[in-house]
Image (tube, rainbow over all chains, first blue to last red; front, side, top):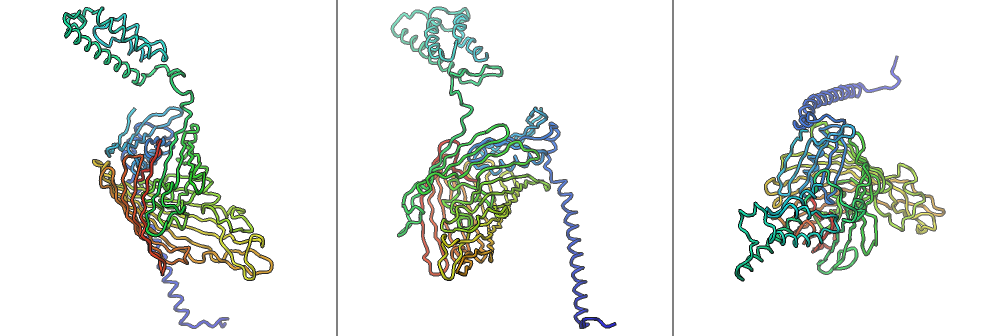
Length: 137
Length: 472
């Protein structure tokens, strides 16, 4: 049975070789992706700041409320809710690190029902000193 | 009542208990009179009722024998009276202890808790550019803008911010007016109203609070001379799987390209379809390198539809003919980097900030054109994509003095993408957190035969209220 299309044998060989090369490349990309994920997974576990675990241990609430004061150009009191202590602590550090005005103070409160308990505070004083502490009830 | 207890304890050891009890104020209104009465009674107490304990102390209340003694006793009594008044003032100013009664309505404004924070920032620009005025108003000295800011908590769930811009050119403009949620679950925060679009870094900053006199040219040309604002909704979520701060912001607004040119009339509004709204996303990454140094790397993207001009072959396009423009999609993608350094020991005296931003404007090349009777219509809007960038640094020399420099590079969308460059240097002086003076020199270098300019600007910014023109 003759082929309906007469494909030159050289072209066929070349396209087969290209397909093999493409498969090899895609396999390499896959391995690189796996390697990256394998590298990142332990990083995710280790990357949690150690103070977060102390904050979580200080009070176990349903959520956390962060209150920043004096940190922005309007010197507003910013309030934001967080589910995890990690996000709350990272937000607090970010707020203090980018504050145009000092002093800037962020306090985290553990929220359990209607009860709020201060658990963490980070302050950048007007003189520049930075202090971070876990507040134990 | 704690304050009353404070009043009831003997202030001076030789004051009798009976007198001390009589010093309790009956009401806030009677306090000044009470102080006068108190001084009078103290004088009596000092001269007539020494206590047993006081007998062991030097007696300043004995009848003086000589004129010199009399003067000495008078001066001691006066000093005692002044000390007593000061002590009373101190006690009055002390915060009341737990359980203290709230102050009566007569002691202050009845609506004190309902008053928002009110601020005003004024901006005066002096233009000393030789042979040409480079200000939009055409004036050498001008109040570029006055910003009036009101801010307050609305209820336990929202905070409201209003920023009005007042200027001779625009009269009163709503710069921003939004509410921000404070109690959304899952760490979300929503903003509803008009706000600076979270596209790039400096676009989110008010002009009066910039490090420089004007926005970088890439922002002026791609997003508007006064930055891009949009009216709609914005949502932000914090994601931190890698142990550093990451924030994702998405916004949907009616339009973020600012005011469209009045002469551009399109057959359909840009927002007739939902896809014609303005959408933006920003992904922020913040990392503390040390306690004194941090870095912020972000990426932004935005897309929207705006009116662009068309040209007609046989007759000029006009609003009477049906249209002078058509809707075309325009997008912005960009990345920015900010490095901040503020030492722990000398934060008041030393700091450094390095900022760089790059943006690419992506234009629709072949939009749908309107059909006008008796003429062929062609697209006259931008048909190429343009890129722009800037890099800026500012170093704090001393507590009140800063120096900075910026380099701008732009494919000018108003000049067929021809290259435009500018370099500028700044000296900033902050007499306090509430006022700022900036002396700026800028050399603009357009491509081709266009004239290069040497601009010299003086900016004075001053604020009252909590709003301060202090960027970092």
